Length: 355
Image (cartoon, rainbow, N blue to C red; front, side, top):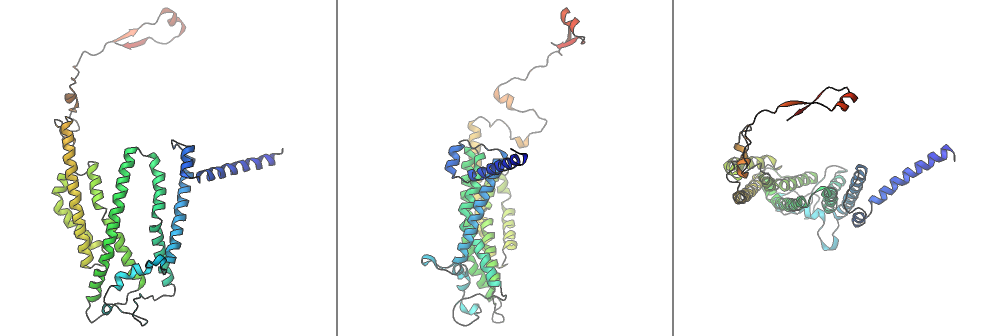
């Protein structure tokens, strides 16, 4: 066999090995779990696993985008179209408060560019695709992270993710119903002097911004509860900061709402204050339980670590009943004389020992 044949065979073996690893990474989770029960992987296998999960997530988002593009004007299984769901808050306005172009009584938004309708439909489809495929790509993220977590950490992560999804959905639903009232205020503030012709891109930008801002803002209680759980913020601190936090939340609502209307600002501000109060009460219950456990375990005689001087001795020795060692005389250093046989073999100096 020539050197060229050996080189080609080696390259083929490397290629087949990489393809084998690729196809092996595409196996079903059950087959991979049976082949590797403890889930240990090398760095290269982690990279292949990340590539596989990213490919599945991107394919899911692409498939969801195609479905969203079709659903934009279609009515599947008797359900309203995606465009109708998104334009319902605008079409709920009285006809006198919106300008209708093109004749007829049908509620429509306007576009002033050649490609504006296509670009808007593609943007809405991509957003819908990300939402429709969220269970798949979130499962891929979860499957990549959880092998490195303990059972207790997994249970905490389950609770955290479930609460985050519920809070985000609640905020988005509230924003969807607030849009109509916000547009009613914005479209009638000019009276009979002005009339608003609303572009589709402007309307969808406003709607999506409200949905995202309300959804993300509703994660506030989850953040406060997490900080309380890890000991960063206590209930007494939240109680002292309550007035300042309420003022800050209303300022945040006034700045964050894209419409700058009082309806959405008040809806977001009042909702955040109620959620903050709920989080404060949860922190109060948690701190009471922690203090009760501290008392039952005998830790009540130990002062809080936040009030300790860094140079102060720890009180744990007194609690455990151990005595502080008394100071004794300094150890004496005595030379150790090696045996005569060793002295003649190596020419090293005398060794020393501490007694």
